[in-house]
Length: 282
Ligand code: BTN
Image 1 (cartoon, rainbow, N blue to C red):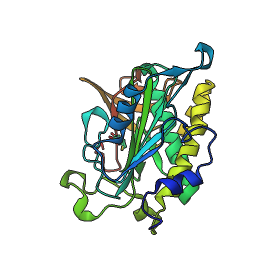
Image 2 (cartoon, helix red, strand yellow):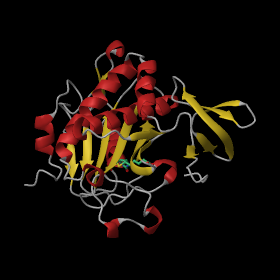
Image 3 (spheres, rainbow, N blue to C red):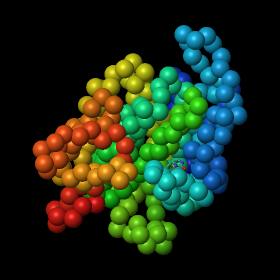
Image 4 (tube, rainbow, N blue to C red):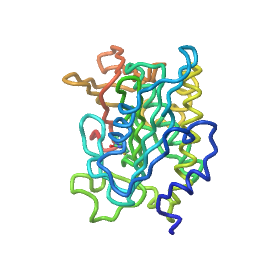
């Protein structure tokens, strides 16, 4: 068995968490091949909605398990996009939680998950990646990974895709030169099992901050990895778009923008392009 291929036993043995990944009623799963790990987690959430405990101590039978896959056939990204997951080229990870939070908190949850992923990569590989609002993990302008947080009923699924190793021929034409992967940056093989175990630990840490209402701490951590703040951007949300400067994020995870006309806007959803040195946006 190669240390560089996902293996559930190895991950579980390396877990350093109190609750995440230690669900007694629902085992963590590793699929050789699946449509989408997020879809699988949402299906399991729908199939097992039973609550245990009382209202003050909301606990659900299958809270805190994760799903992994070596390959996804219908990996999903934000805004209805596809996520490429060729076999062993990346980490496709989804975590199911049952928070007392509503869909309006998805922005902050995405911010928190980005922080967890960035911290895990830094701990494991000593590599400081960048966070581009709202869900992109980047390195020098190239996309290294992304977050897709989804809610259905009371279930929250945090999906994280990380590029690990891509062969040139696996990269679709439209993504050539736009994506990055960890082994290219690390200049050596990356052990995905150790990385996933650390990621689950970091998710537990930010999850506690979220539950304790420590939103400013989450924002502070995000600012440290941000490649967004202070930059000239074009932000779009649905049919609306703004050109201006990214000033900060607020406690909801919204991006605060000062437009070129001097108005301030809070962007709760959507995406941004950052102005590059040559004046183009991407
Ligand atoms: C994005 O950048 O748009 C988000 C990408 C999220 C991809 C991950 S891979 C694991 C999980 N399962 C999915 O189908 N999507 C997420």
